[in-house]
Amino acid sequence: AQAILSQGSSVEAARPPRLPTHEVTMTGRRIFLVGGHITPFIGKGSKNFIWKKHPDFGKKTNPTLKDYISDSIRGALASTGASAAHVDRVFVGNFAGELFNQQGHLGAAVAAADQGLMYKPSMRVEGACASGGLAVAAAVLAVKGGDDCVLAVGAEMQSAASAREGGTFLARAADFERQAGIDDFTFPCLFARRTKAYLSKYPHASLGDLGLVSAKAYGNGNLNPLAHMHSAKVSPEYASVASEKNPNFLSNQEFSSYLRVTDCSQVSDGGAACVIASEEGLQKLGARPESCVEVVATDDGVGDLWSDPPDLTEMTTIKTVVRRMMAKHGIQLSDIGVAELHDCFSIAELLTYEALGL
Image 1 (cartoon, rainbow, N blue to C red):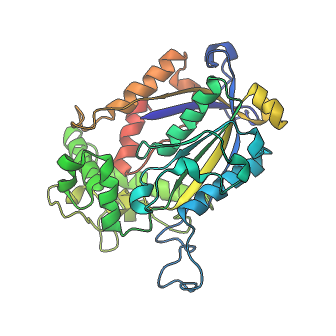
Image 2 (tube, helix red, strand yellow):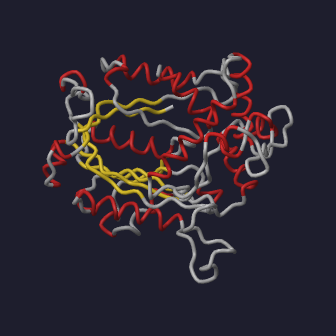
Image 3 (cartoon, rainbow, N blue to C red):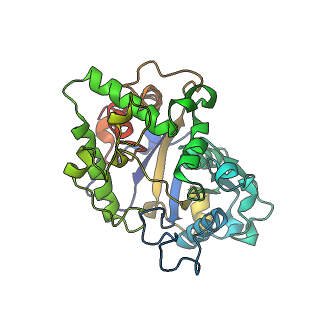
């Protein structure tokens, strides 16, 4: 689990009052998110994804992992007014490039974006679904430790594998030997297992409630022109029941009825990058603190890969890490105006709400 708390400095009218700086800064150094860049995210179902029935099939190809890393870095530098010369260090978040793209060693993949990044300290960060977030957290810690301007980038290109093969690749984030056999689609089944446990523990809850979560997520995607499923319309009624177009696709019969296609996030290709800086770094960039987002706190922690969680109806690691971070920095839940969380499956989002205390 990984958590980052920030406070904006430019648009404050709709937000809670700004927290006193002396209570929330990180050991003497104020740290800022200067800005960044997000590429369009594409995959099956996106009008921009090139596949055999696309009119540009054979004429154009989809971006590669190298393209996503390079485009993200160039965009982040351009949007913040930074140059490669300003960058003290780079962190690259990626889960399984060796499997999906036959490419590892991604710390050395950044110079293709700008030759000014040659010979800079740069390393790849891997933490399954948290890889990109951990790259940002590592950048914050680097600035806390003395760097003035650090670049964090995350990219995935997973459409190179079939859904079934990709599901096996993603299962490497589980205890593969013990858990991969639960279904060809390991993680969907592991979360269907959580859904079954949740509905058993709380009889007033229903699969219809999870359908509302899915419909809300698709609705947010409709508002974001960079989203993979920007054009997909999913109603609460459609997401709440299994159907021919929204099937229960797991082969494990014990858990199949607890997961539909709309309960699952998409396999998307894309990238993002951001610039993290100290106050001294802002001066070098010619940026002002009030035009940036101040990073108040970060924290992360892990559970035990080799055993099941103590309670399938709780995200115990998230609960522990977030509450530890908030307690350490004197932050109350009422201080938080917006919470962005990991929603790989509808049940994951619901359980994370509860772990946060929402």
